[in-house]
Length: 108
Image 1 (tube, rainbow, N blue to C red):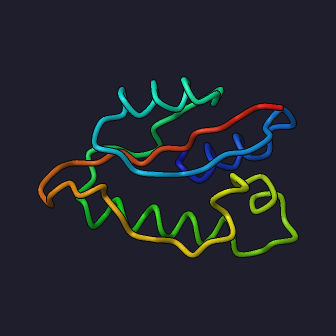
Image 2 (image 1 turned 180 degrees about the horizontal axis):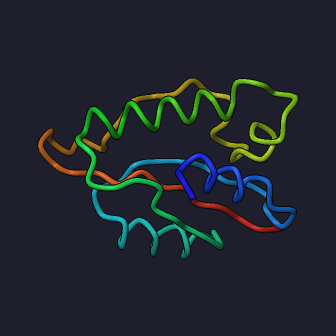
């Protein structure tokens, strides 16, 4: 299963309420944080990415998933994050670090 198929299968799940995509330098810490906040799942989609590559992938995914407001990927995207424009950010982490691209979700 490639990354796009994995994302599609998660988004199309009838049990999914909301999801979001993001990047992180530390997936273990990020996963714990989301689970503490009430998220039900967290999967690394791609890993060991350069900062530029991670940001590029995250931006492409966000823009693709939220482009059509009539479709399920937009409607299910985290409602606090889907309507704003994408903002490239690494939390102040300097270039040279490796990043993971992830999807996290909340079930109904």
